[in-house]
Length: 454
Image (cartoon, rainbow, N blue to C red; front, side, top):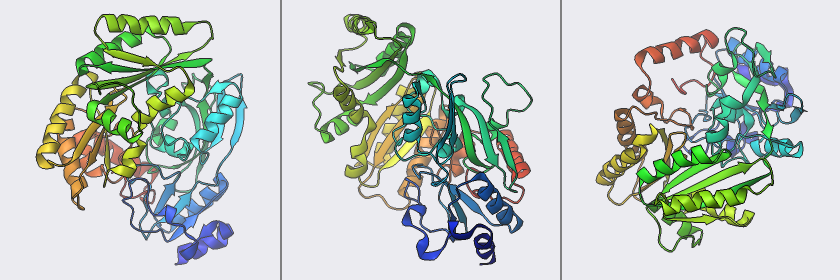
């Protein structure tokens, strides 16, 4: 393998081959990757990445970037002909600027490490998702991750001020901007955020930090209908200025996870359960106002019941039902789908989707949960007798309904390979053509994550 020999000569022992390559490089969390790459490069600097890409580009060698491997769309999977650049050693917080309220961080840094560093400095890094302990900042940016704080702080791209990126030919673009206002031509960072490693390799980022909340109030509410969920959301947005999370669970999703976690939260499982959280910027008694707000919603019949967390432990119990980790262990061949619909259509979409999937797979588990306030709905599907064709059949059923509702086939998980064949359900021919033109302009030899997204 001449290219591997060239890489080893140029980069030394950071290039792994054969038995040195660990199984973790086979697949992301979708478990759809089957092959190990022919080599893995573990750089510690942008310069090493630039040299690797320069050699690979000159040889037409396919390159796949891997981070924490928590993705669910196959975007980080490599085949046996690809070379992987793993960012697991490109870690560290380079700077926290308290005046600019920014953090400069290397791309391989785990999200939770960055969150804790921000908190130690008296700030909040608002990017947050369930895989925080293992996902990496670079992967969060490459997929434009969403998560549970989007309602208040936006998706990942809304929290990025500057980037350093290595292009396919090894050119290093360093634009570590700290200013919120910078109107100097094309906003180059946005080409790479959400591009899933197909346009360049993100190596460093400047992230926005926010004031650290003095506390957080959490409530779990029971509701009778999706219409009530929407009405409750509107009321929360009007009356709770610090609203930072609004998470809805349909009945069978909540029941399954509450029972799996041995939680007795309501006497009877309601049709809908919603977690709301309010960030507090002071300790001066907002709890009374929070309780009064929920009391009014109860009196008016918008919600049927409400449990207010009295401790961090109680708050975590609410979230354990929402995060649904037990499903991964208890449901065979679990498929997680991630779509986006106009908020008012989500209830009808869920009904149509449930009916269509149950008609095709009568014995399957089908349940729904989502952030709702940012139009995001997740679907959990499990069929005990599933085979290799089942995921594609499920995707086809769900995404055809998404197309009918003019929604998005991916709210926050990206496209990768698993959603690539359905991208035209949410993008027009003109949009797809422009994507191809951008890809060709930045990666004319097609070496970066080939076969992903497009």
